Image (cartoon, rainbow over all chains, first blue to last red; front, side, top):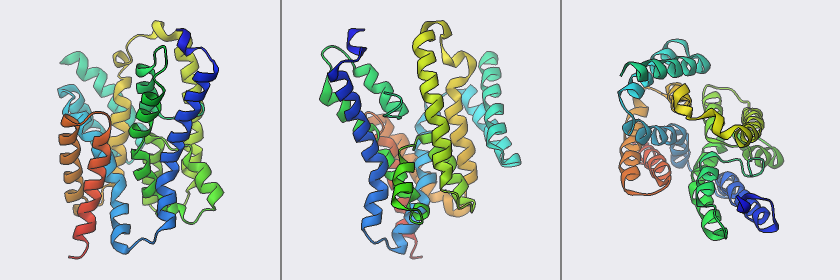
Length: 103
Length: 181
């Protein structure tokens, strides 16, 4: 555990992690405020959020099992019907608990 | 670490790499690569954040995390002009992240497996719900399928989180190429 205790090196590493993380968070915004963006690129950017979310979800769901797939369907249905993120979330977690115990 | 870095996955990976002596380059380098996806997420925020002052915009992006970024995009896409959503939701995440880290450090062994409470599914559920909100009908289909295919494939063959970058870029490229038609 000694390497987790605060010493100058540990602090330096954490500062280093903070700097590179902030660089990535601000980098995209900074880059695009420096260059002119065509309509074409703009429409690509508008498509980015959905594409990123699907990219996060895809492998996650593929590697999951029937319990998670069924629960994903529950979330999808509740969200589609109610447009309430919190409700969909709660139903999804409840569903995954139930399905995991059943399957 | 939780207070100043504020990045879920990269922190977890850094802890895995952590040993004595600390592999400094590996820890910081991995943090950077795992977080490259934030460059894309920041880019996606630009159409709305261009109206904010630099101080507001660059202050807000510190609080970017996967979850509240997705929630913010959902809000902005549905017509809300409140870029501050990222800041507000990010502050909430930041506070909970620190509190939870402290609790985790104290209670660690007592809690056991998060999956026994279904908590491991929370992130997936949030993203599914957000995706529903971002769906724009048929025009979303091709970019999303592309993103899904590329991300799933590259997750098989590439380490870390490159698949998020590749899938996101691929999906958005489809839109860039197609816009002429």
